[in-house]
Length: 201
Image 1 (cartoon, helix red, strand yellow):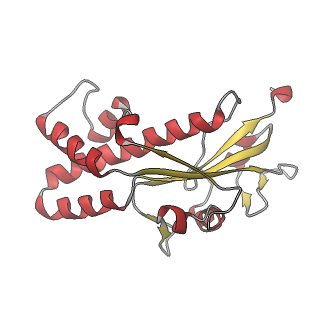
Image 2 (image 1 turned 90 degrees about the vertical axis):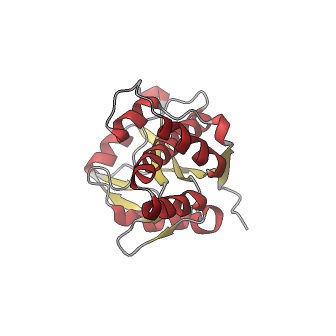
């Protein structure tokens, strides 16, 4: 049963606009580039994608330099500490595009390398766009720091484990973690987003 302090955001495929800049970057093409294969892969992806996000709002203690103490994990990270400077609370979130996307990518890796490449780029851009959507819903009128994910800078991937455990992400989202701290479902994101104290900004 979901903990009372864990909240969920879901979205239908048509509610999320895939960021064209992000997609173009992942495909290595110009922003206005288009091709029939992209349209075909997008149409298939949007039929199976299952956007889900779980998040909590929790305190962070930054009283010790370069230490971010969230209660459920204590992170030694100069980069994350700098990102959260001035924050007393954070949103901690995990998001997925769903297991069906993993299955489609596994199938395409065998039958069509071209479709696999395009669908992989589309799915990555899609989950990133959903993350922006979910973060906007969390923020409302609040001023927040940019979201920051394990694996970025010196915020070690090893913190995926306590992070996902606290969010009950395996039960609620079906996300599991490998021994090298990589997530399955593959198109998943974890992130911290600091809530700014307006009086200090």
